Image (cartoon, rainbow, N blue to C red):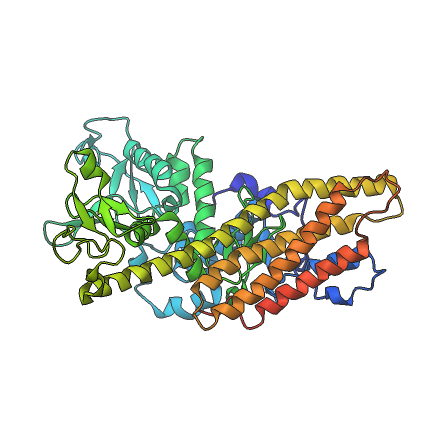
Length: 530
């Protein structure tokens, strides 16, 4: 089976994490409450309280895999299915993908579907291909290079798939597989025979017989085979609904959770939280659907077009969009004026300015404003403006919290570590860990606030004011704790005056912030569709 050279290590216990003990694999949250901490409690108590995932009090159990253990998990799943079905490892993987890598589902449904192997391009047995015996009196034509063997090349070998009997020369097999690995990515783990099969007319479709790992190992250049192995692992994780990659950039670990319905914020060993629904950063309280809509607005041109539609009108003479900032309703297009054809028109109705008729000298209040068609058009523009202003308002809050969060993850963490070092140096009896924990609580709050603007934007009009009011309360507590931390960072340890805030005050403010977050989430959950 693939990854044979890593299997000896993959099954062993990791140097950094223990995978043998199920409890060691499971990331569980502490249920202690910050409010129960006594003022003289230890920083360990404070850490336990703040480490609780605020958005999900009862998280499902999670297994975290590094790269080697993903391979071991894949091998175990494939071997189990291969033994049951009498298929090659790759064929067993394809069947497991058909049943979402659910072994119980496989057992319940596989034997009730007699046509499943033909439909998936598989056949019983572990040998997928064979070498064709070439004879001069019975040459074999390669359908890819159109050469006959051994007539055109006596030294070339020809191999055929057992499932369909299609024979291709070794050179074409290699070229086909190299191209698949280099250009098709994880799809190469599900590669099928390249030969076209007639559909009864002039059209044809590719044969669906699977090309398994034994063929890749036979025909791929040695330096390219590890890339194929990597894509097989990618395909395994991507096709398994109970496994997701950690969304942190450069992490490389995978997360396994059997109860994916509750897995809105699954934490990896690196500290990053991933949403099992979409595979992106955990985004409570916003839903995956809301995030998809939000990102489409961020990345698309729809809002640029909406702004143009809401704030500009086309010149009736040259159709150039013209924006009016202030002043009267009498307009002169700069494009027309630059071209030497100065023409006047009305901002309200979009028609040429009638100096002798209805517009006359009504510069600020032309009578055309009472025209029913003009009023209908103005009403539509006002709706577009209102929707655009609303989006801009919520996007500003979203972007501001993301910017501040990034700063706190980097700069504030550095400041907190430096302050902790100074506390330890000048006051050996004082535990400075509370500073780091306060920064972590700020990052958690900023993350939630960032995505609360996405959630709030999608709320209905009757729910939105109440939710916004609660969010403002959290933002006030975040601001207070941030100011307290800045005061501590500026404090001179050599000064005769004590620090502006003591440990208990910081702990209490962090606890209050946590309570405010919990209050916001009451009645507004990630499962709710706005």
